[in-house]
Image (tube, rainbow, N blue to C red; front, top):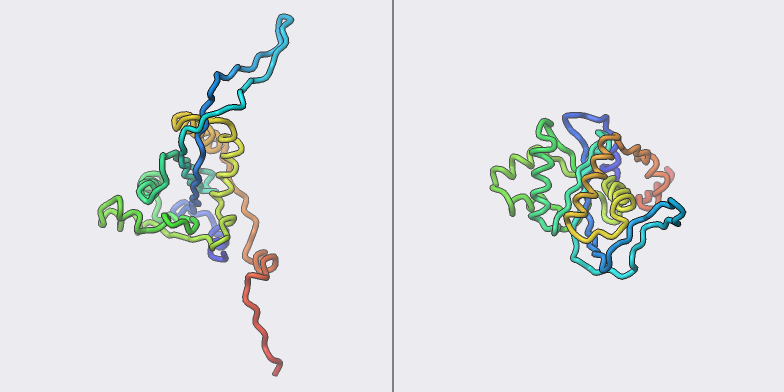
Length: 217
C-alpha cells in the first residue's frame, strides 16, 4: 500500500509517467423493440421523453481496458471481446511502445489479477521484443483487497456512470460511446487530485499495521 501511495506522490515526470490500469467486463444488451425518440412539445402537440421497452436481449459481453495517466490528464480506453493474457500483452505493448514511446520508463499500477504478469508478453511477442518492452516498465502491484488504491478503478467508475449506463447492444456501439467519452475527458484535461498519503494510511488504517511492544528498561 505504501509503495502505491509513494508512486502517487512523486513529482510528475514527463519522462517517467505513472499509468494506472484496470479492466472490467460489460454485458451487451440489445433492444427487442425499436426505441421511440423523445419529442418536444410543439404546435399544440404534447411531447414525451424517449420511450424504451423494458424487455431486452443479451448479446454477449465485452471487456473494457482502462489506462489513465492521472497527473498528465490522459487516458486511453480499449474495448475488446476478451481479457486474456494475449489481450493484456497487446495493450501493454501499445502503451509502452506507442502511447509513451518518447519516454524513458512507464510506471504501471495494476492489481493482482491472474492475467497481470510480465510473462503475458512472452505468450504474444518474441523474447527479444518482450525484453525491450519490459526494460521500459516499472510495475507496482496494489495489495490484495486494496483495489481502491488503483486510480484506474475510479476512472472506470466514472466511465460506467457517464457512458455505459444505458443499453449498448454491440461492440461497435460501445467503442463509439467510449471514444467520444475519452476524447472529451482528454480535451478537457480531466485529471485526478489524489490526497490520501502514507501518513494518512498509518493513522486511519492503523489496524493493518503490526503492533510492537517494548519493555521499559
